[in-house]
Amino acid sequence: MGDLTKLTDWVLFIFFLLIAAVAPLFDAQCVLPRHLFPTFAVDLKAWYTREYGDYLVSEKPNFFVGLIWLELLFAWPLSVLSLYGIAAGRSWVSTTCLLYGASTLTSMVAILAEQTQSKRASDKLLMMYYPFLGFAVLAMLRGLLHVSKRPVVALSRKKKKA
Image (cartoon, rainbow, N blue to C red; front, side, top):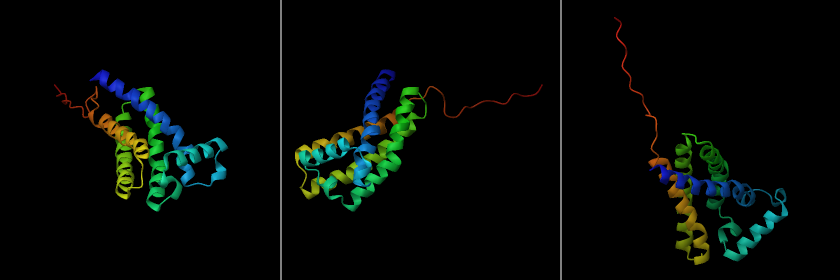
């Protein structure tokens, strides 16, 4: 179980590193004024929108904007905490992974349901979003299946006075 946890931590560390950079530079452009971002980030977002045909990013429907705010205010800090927790070997990283995974899974289900039901998303666009669903499930599993080396509740007997 230890090697599987280490492999999972390594994969999630790379994913959280990506999220820690992408969320403030890319996703935040959906909710904040464009002039706040460096030119390369604005150009990258424009290229992505054209290349993948991501109509949610270009049209910014209300539910999508709400999910972006959720990501920026809740999920992004959890990804940064998880990065630190994995790197430092903290015991609470299971909790941050579980919270991040549940939040992201919920968001991805809403986004993917919209994309598949509207029939506006290309296979290329769907293949861009599906890995986030997979990483969310992996993060939840990391949070649920982590075996602690210490008992959660320590049971001890009181010593009797002689």
